[in-house]
Structure formats: structure tokens, C-alpha cells
Length: 161
Image (cartoon, rainbow, N blue to C red; front, side):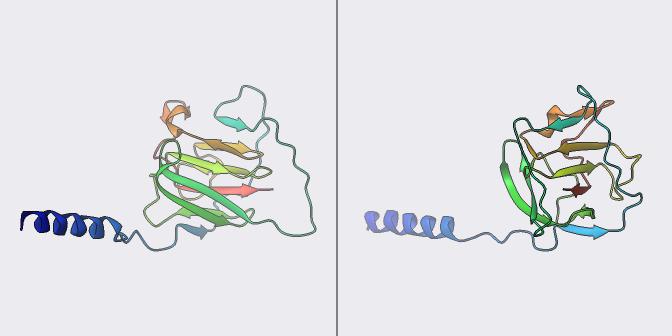
């Protein structure tokens, strides 16, 4: 009797653990009209916060449009909730589906550049983090500008090839 009770409890626990949990549903990147046209910043070595991937060699090709997927994670080091945001070039996207001000690590594919904005309108005067030629940021806590930290502060982004 005691053995069957323990066995029943173990089976019930295993079934409960294997049951998928329904995540948040909805659009995670919402295209919006950008406040300003995209201005790709002139970059000087040592400028902050600006990340330039090292060792990446990229050739542009107009033969076919490449798919851009910006990966974002809720926790540092690719931890927690994850989503791949399928995006078009030169478009401003707000973060939706519970992602606004929730990103702690992110990845941009090689060859692409993206600007991540603190506010929703991709304005050129906004506090922003620029990643050129792809790159991975394991912890946005490590990047700040004039005392403003980028961890859990990104609301919009825009990318270019």
C-alpha cells in the first residue's frame, strides 16, 4: 500500500513536470513609424556604448534578401525566456509581448548592425546602444551611457545591412 502511494505520487509528479506551460502569446516586435530617419553613427574607436564584432568578414550581396533574426533573452548569458525576432532592414520595431524593458542579453547576426533604443520611437536623440557587424551581448548590465544602464531598458530597435 505504501509502495503504491509513493509510486502514484512519483508518476503524478512526472506528468505534471512534463506538461507544457503556456507562454505569453502575441507579437513580440511591432513595426512602428520611426520618429527620425536612420542615421548610422560615425564610430571612433573607444566610443561608448558601441560594440564592434571582431574578426568578422562580411560581403554584401544584392542577389537575395537575407533574413534577419535578432535574438533576445530575459536573463543574462542567454538565460530565461528567449525569442528570435524576425525583422526587416531599416524598420523601427517596438518590443511587444511582454518584452518591453525586459531584455538582459541579445544577439545580432554577423553582417548586420542594429541600434537598440530606450524609448519606443527610434528617435536619433534617444539613449541608444549600437551594435555594428553583428555581435552578442551576454549581459546588458555591463553597458551604460551617462549613468543609464541598458539592462531591462530596451524598448525598440532598428537594423541595417
